[in-house]
Image (cartoon, rainbow, N blue to C red; front, top):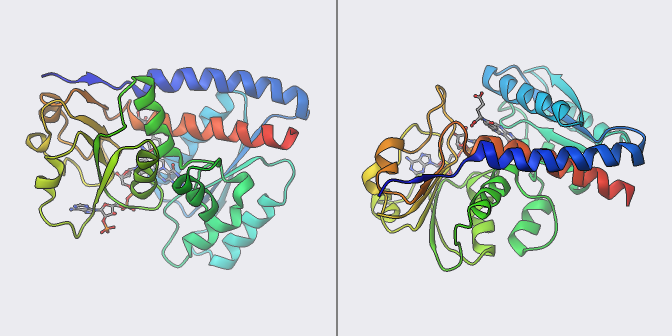
Length: 280
Ligand SMILES: NC(=O)C1=CN([C@@H]2O[C@H](COP(=O)(O)OP(=O)(O)OC[C@H]3O[C@@H](n4cnc5c(N)ncnc54)[C@H](OP(=O)(O)O)[C@@H]3O)[C@@H](O)[C@H]2O)C=CC1
Ligand SMILES: Nc1nc(=O)c2c([nH]1)NC[C@@H]1CN(c3ccc(C(=O)N[C@@H](CCC(=O)O)C(=O)O)cc3)C=[N+]21
């Protein structure tokens, strides 16, 4: 079998166009554009690039984007104070704190300061609980984008064995929750998993969320399985050995052009949702 492509660029475009239309209508109602603020602590070059990409795309589709950069040496209290100020600012609809923050900063504490109403990146405990309980709320952007992409191609989820490799708070863990909510049978793997290959070989759907280039080998992929590569490593390499996996999979996400564009489109769509909630 040769896999068909889950085209994240094309699917994201449709969502961005719809988001731009909603943003334009809201701009009239609010008297200002829906506004996303990104907070970057430090100057990690990869993070600088992602944050710029998010800001540029926001502006291109009719949102306002502001960027706050705090010094690498910031304390938890300083970052929390900045995020709390944004949470209290009526001209701000959504807040994204770029992960990871420097190690001296308590990242979960900073995420909590965003508050549920402006958590368009889906990183607060309230958003996580809503995902786990199937209640309304903002989804983690990458997991939400992955589900939207699978839905766009009508990939069946109910009853399928989904194996998620990785359990980080912004990607692995929440994507498993969303798949469970859609009635997949979910297995999580992580760094302590014994015999990763054997588990992945039983998957109908594999979600790679590790951050290790080509960790998931092509010959682990069951014939006809669906492969979602959330990995985004330097040099545009995913967590899956792409060419070999594509020979066996029924569907596969490319890197780039798969999960990445869906993440940003979901972020912008949720920012417009947050702005719309303020209009009431
Ligand atoms: N395209 C996008 O929009 C996004 C892409 N990413 C990409 O996704 C990848 C993962 O990111 P993130 O979730 O933040 O990463 P983290 O480093 O936070 O988490 C990595 C996870 O992988 C697990 N892991 C590490 N080594 C192994 C191994 N050998 N076998 C099995 N599991 C292992 C870890 O297990 P343990 O918990 O036991 O330590 C951990 O749960 C990165 O490439 C990142 O760039 C991330 C966010 C958004
Ligand atoms: N709080 C938080 N939320 C995040 O969502 C978050 C984060 N922190 N930290 C870092 C990761 C990384 N990330 C990416 C988003 C889009 C692309 C993307 O669009 N990539 C393009 C390629 C772009 C290019 O390289 O030109 C693609 O895959 O096609 C990549 C990576 C979000 N992250």
